[in-house]
Image (cartoon, rainbow, N blue to C red; front, side):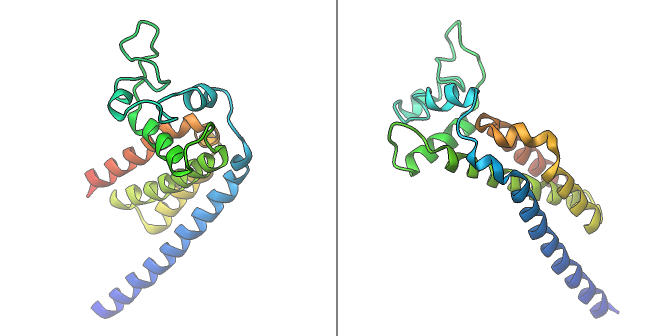
Length: 177
């Protein structure tokens, strides 16, 4: 009976892994058109006009700036401090060789990849909370393709929300375990 139970668990794990691959593909297909979105609205100020992202400030100086590249102590600063997001933008720009303008398509691909990671992390959090494999897969699929995430994935500055989602789901999974 123990061997039978172990075989069943292995079969469920294989189907669950296949389900996760399918969910990742469906999520990628749903958001694929965002790869050609370019820089929109706030992306221009937060990325194209941000010396922190463009690597024109030191790393330590970047930690004194808000999300938009302004001195966080300045009266007109937005006071939004998102160093992880700004760092990801800066690293991407560096990886593509610097230059005058970051690569929007690469940044959108990163947003899509991070959204897929968030989707898979939601599955992990659901499993850690004790839900069935089918329920966790359904939760991940719903999360992955839900229209509420379009702004976070399609606009590059929405990466802050995507990263927050990943860290939140990881926190839930760690707490539940």
